[in-house]
Length: 566
Image (cartoon, rainbow, N blue to C red):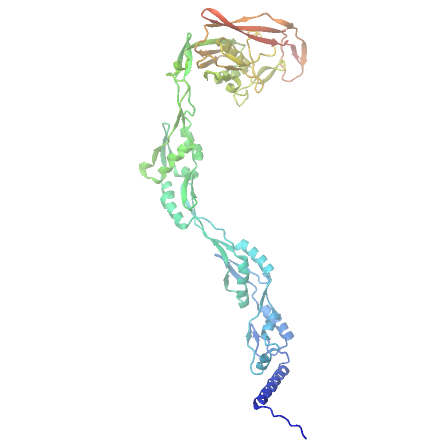
């Protein structure tokens, strides 16, 4: 018996036929195309249809790369530049482009579709080396970035100068990398690509510059200003004013005017006008008529024009016009300590003491003694204050008005600046002694000098020995000093605390003989021999006709060796 064969349904037969048909078409497509690129396929106008991948790759290498842009024009803000695509790491990716051109691959639908259509234009794929692109754009930013600039107003030789504000642009390197792909792909070498950038607006705007010029700068430079200070009148031109004027922005960007008062105060036109003003007060000068104190010269207040006061007077005038550009500078007046009216109230009524030292004339001595006397004369010592010779006279230098002279150094005469000033110290010491005020610091010469009283003389040395006394008289004390080529006199004026003060000198003790020496020092000064000795002098205080106390002053003198200069 024959086996029965089942019949298939018509639909199944049709499906099988369809499967066989599609498979056949797929096989036919593969055989016909043979892996070639579809006919009519182009990349940027380069025909690669019908070529194998290898052939197409070589052709694209020759034509596509050669036809790419050599330079891309770019712009950051309002500045333009150029980017070399190769340096920026931009290139066509041939492999990816061919993948796109043959994107049907092994897809049966694509293969079969290739039997019934031809290829078309394929956009090339761009590859970017981001590290190279970032480095190239970083260099570009250095030339194309624009720093923000605020608007400004300045002054030059009486003219107003304006600076226009400018927006700042900083290239956004990371965002700019992607922005280069499109123009490179288009081959747009002649068009300009605006690269993304961070924008910074100026704080001082153009409108603010116009307002500052209109409201202050132009009026300020429109005419001179005239000032009165301490009785002096002077005019300042716009050219001079402009040197010290400025307009600076505040936190809101508003330009505000400023004036360099210190600089303007030093400008010749101002300094010359104010140089005759007494910057420091001058005390009334006192003298003696017999034993009574009298005013010999009136006091004078000090007049000071400060930098701040000058600026405060000038600035408001700069926006005015005509006669309104005239004003007064507020002066600071410093009152003197001694005036004709208050001298008696201070207790400066009579002579407390007077002492005179005489000496042989010498040019250096006249100069140095005269300079020290000028600095000491008129000293006012208030009750309980301490007066210092070194502080009052200052260092004995050429800059301070002193010259080289003969003085004692290291137990012998030598030449040094300020020689002869010890005569002034000795005179002040004796005036102090007989005025009865308290000695604080003093020292005698190392050996005795015959023109001075034994045990009642003093010397000074800058930085090591001073002459100081404290005013314990209970009233103010005034030192009057004057000198000639052969003498100097110092008077103490105040109110007497004691009727009389006298001096009692004891005998010389511990007498020592000098030696004979030869000196080769180029500053050597010959000196005659004199014995050394100790001596005590007592200061005796008298009141109501009787002695109330004594105060000893003990002095040790070294021998004065005989010096011969070789």
